[in-house]
Image (cartoon, rainbow, N blue to C red; front, top):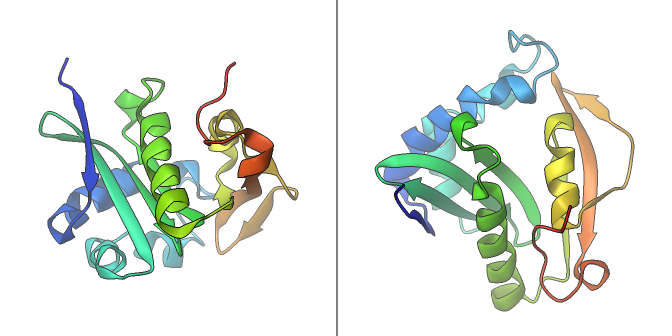
Length: 166
């Protein structure tokens, strides 16, 4: 199997990131059809993703296995985990954990971040809990998507956030 290569995303990755994100969007939308989540789905378009990648507020990292995009992570303003998408056939292979380790380490080293937040899809809360995140509120619904607000204080999780032990 090819080695996983993680690197900073660039504008040329926007279409592949968009395709990956939209392929798993049903995990976030309340209705499988996406009805009611049009603004969320529009935020996943190639043009929207390109805008995020170009913005200094966002740090996008992509993980490729061979020529195939295996996953993507984005941090907004250094401490909010904005996007984390993994190709369905790559679930449970450690891609999310490796992306999180790179993104969280980068945020802590470059920005001195000591706390992270994420609005997790209900589907992904178990993954974020393994990283050390804890729910800070009940499941919420807004603009056609469902999410659980979560937080990780680095002091609570140890020196380096990362996948926890089962």
